[in-house]
Length: 482
Image (cartoon, rainbow, N blue to C red; front, side):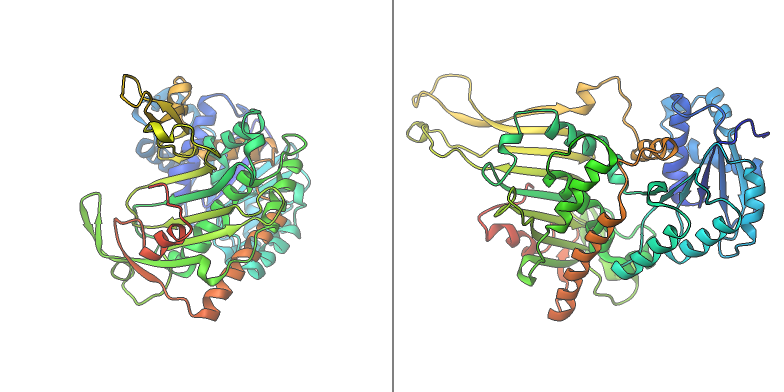
């Protein structure tokens, strides 16, 4: 395709699983909705040998597999595929980037780069981009995780990227921040007056954040066993949810204001004691009525890597003093679910106690997946007559995104993030000081594990994790929202 614009999006790892499942369908959606410039070129690169036509056929196959049937339009698909180009590249060899630069041509109007590569290739990739003149002021670079496996390695990667790009050019991706319900949390908190007077230790008893999965290793054996649940999920996604839930109101909705408030929360996280956390590893069991193997059977080797982690965290500031944040993540659990639960305190006096009225404290449930909704659980009178005069029960006030915005298509999180990368909007991306604050906290947890020789506790696949994880809340007189 002849270049009609000097604006381009460059996808590293363009033939990989993330590209096929998420990036190409997301870019097709942006194209379909007219949200990206018609002249924007999309250039894929990877080690495998392909030409433009072969890459387009690969992209067509991916879209056929991962797009819903009602979204497949041959005319729009053909026009999208015309955008695509490909350049073979071995990122470990800087001289290969010269050919890439030649393929891209004039990028003075802007170049956006999505870099999804092994951590070992970050530094040579940045060197190659610099060598080929692809690290100029008009370039933005999006970095897919993992950005290291501890604070030291994260700093080395960030230093390597900073050698070629300023912070305003760097877009560190956490795909949870692209989810509609996560962004709705900001709208819920800061566009509605009713919650703010209660959003503190005076009104909230505790907060729960759960990210549970029913799947096991799913083809990620080597990566997952080297990483574990704490670094794979808690260090990034879950700590970002903590920050958004606990942050102070920003001055305005912009990248600097939002990220300034998030990093304050991350720096206020109290170091976690050994009795405030649980490590677990799934054994054989049944998920959804189907028998599944244990982690060691899936892995085919001995390992003490955690597939479950539960933590009782504290944000040491005025707003949240004394309010525990219970974090829980696990594989092969009973249900796939990502949610934030804000448990409010009960009423100070129950006037219905002598009339059969049993009160439950209000609870706000923000569900991220698989459904997307915001649900406020409140007490209401049960209709009808009763000899006690009034009987109360808990009911839900629902904001279902599917129902409230019935005409809106449910979007992939990467659609928002890719569009913001192209447009240069950094609000939903993670700043370097956030990443370092997250690693500082997580590294301290791993030191406690090492110092205390904390073992993984077994749990049956299809359960809600080890008994110790359940006890983490129960001993405080609280319960997980199961």
